[in-house]
Image 1 (cartoon, rainbow, N blue to C red):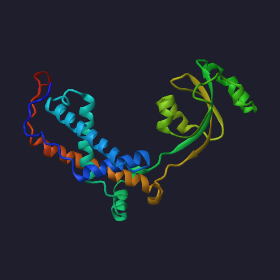
Image 2 (image 1 turned 180 degrees about the vertical axis):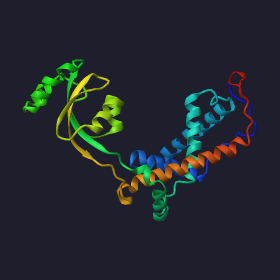
Image 3 (image 1 turned 60 degrees about the vertical axis):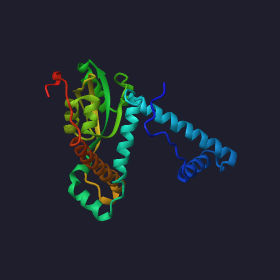
Image 4 (image 1 turned 90 degrees about the horizontal axis):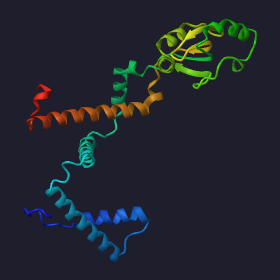
Length: 244
């Protein structure tokens, strides 16, 4: 079962290892380990280290997708750790100016709708009732997505109802019942309650988001450079089916 020793058979327990074991025990239990407990912790660590080395020597890490993913994540963490300093204000302001348009918030619209199902012909009667003061909740058919939609962007409306319906909402008058409008679900009549123009937020409004985006971009760049450097050290052979 065991691998042949190849010079890696010395397990050295140094002071840093002991310190980490003591501090880990403190975090888990709220108490420093006794001398006897510390000996047990060290003995467990040595046993794990021996088993870990034997597993690597036998190649048990090679065909396990979970282990493979964890090792890749650790390598990514090492790369990321080199770039995880916070940006200065000047760096963050330059970053914001260069990407200002990407942070523009879209136009948004609030509306209420009455669902008619496949009966678009019923729109006339429903519109007359609504314009006469009938409550929209008392008309139409039940609709799983609800009847009132607050501050939705065109993209959000399209994802719920379809592109054609989103375009119709964009051009519908404010404050007046209109329809029938067809969505991917069927027919509706609706009233636009309000429109809100899109705007680009000020620097301070989105500063925390800018920091996260700045860090993520630096991490991507660092990973790309690290992988390019690794690629120069490896020869990759593809199967003929891929045509490489």
